[in-house]
Amino acid sequence: MIDPMPTQEQTARLAERREQLRVTLAGCGPAHTLRDLLSFYRDGRDGKGTGRSFADAWQEALPRACATAADDERTWWLTTLTEQCAAWRRAYERADQLPRERALVALLYDPERVELVPSPRVCALCGGDMEGRVKQARYCCPEHERAAARKRKAVHCTPRDQRTLTPARESSRVGAGV
Image (cartoon, rainbow, N blue to C red; front, side, top):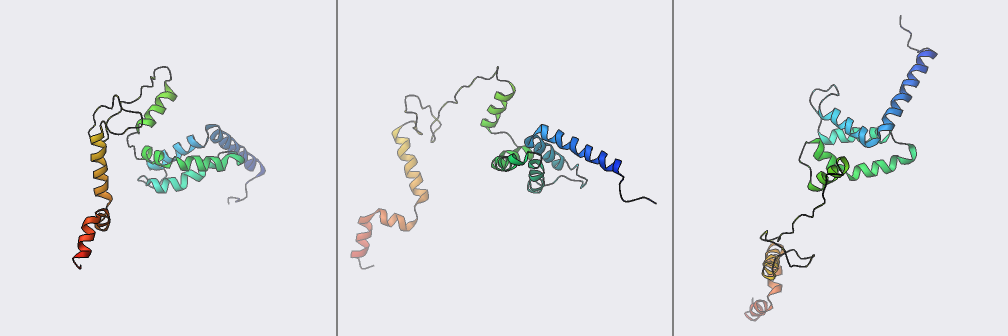
């Protein structure tokens, strides 16, 4: 017959093992723990066979990862990691990194090799060169600015807005008794 109550020695060993595990996880930090837990769930190593969806894995992994932080830091970690949820989702789904994420990784892992070169500015309408234009400009010439404004106006105006924008047409309709 097996005694369900552990001995003092077993309890002490279990407590020591838990403390070692807590120190190991805390040494990695919640971000590393979150990464490992999400990988564990994505790859289906949780005993459920196939991998979990990101939403399911995130719901379980985030609180567990934040629990490894010191008491006074848990709220900060929870807020910080939650704000980064979109980046975690892209990584979980093995999607391509955004350019700013690639730049950050390059800076972190090889600061000697990285040259910070600004990307060339191009016109938002035609993709043309923006040389000679002020820094805030989005278009290469005034014609493209006007064309983009007309395009925005056409997309955002309802038929009612169109009538109010053309008072001559509106007054002719009123005079016709319509």
